[in-house]
Length: 212
Image 1 (tube, one colour):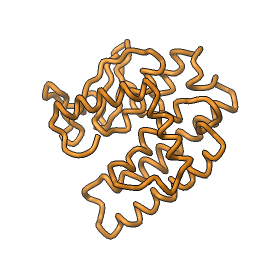
Image 2 (cartoon, rainbow, N blue to C red; image 1 turned 30 degrees about the vertical axis):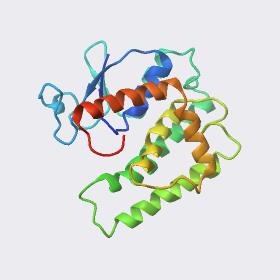
Image 3 (cartoon, rainbow, N blue to C red; image 1 turned 30 degrees about the horizontal axis):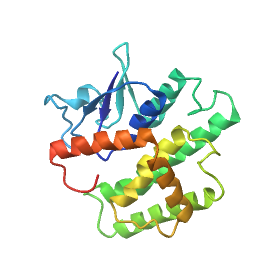
Image 4 (spheres, rainbow, N blue to C red; image 1 turned 180 degrees about the vertical axis):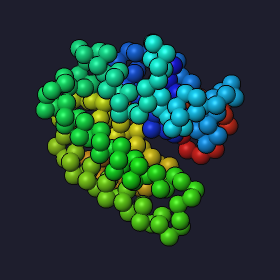
């Protein structure tokens, strides 16, 4: 399956999940600001939203939205513990975190810091919103290895990909030792290391400026 990805994108979470599951994906790196594919064609023809991630399914259709793609991949490997079985409370706990990460942490938290159009007088408030969410995560992770217990799930892949954006905005994680230990724990997973290596290789190929 073709997977449409971006350097420093939330799509990293999907790549991590696919590697955890052993689901092979062909990475297609998208120039999201210009909405272009590597061959110069229009990315809007893949995803009319113009965003990553997108996954080309075996039947030629496209699936979008990272949280949904991660569930789809996990359900391809029901023997995996990356996502609990449908109908169980644990499944809904994972979905609860996926919703929070996508809305409060990603869109409501970090995106205003990334956007050049964000007014300068709003940036300190946006940064404070991120800090408040980091504090919430740190408190929740006290006594826990992962968001929903002792097992790594798709919610943790999602959280890692977004929370690591603190690195790009020079937000010091030192005040949150539980969160720091959590992110370090996840960073040691082979799936994360290979996904990050692929991202760094693409960033180098593009001559990407900034941290990756």
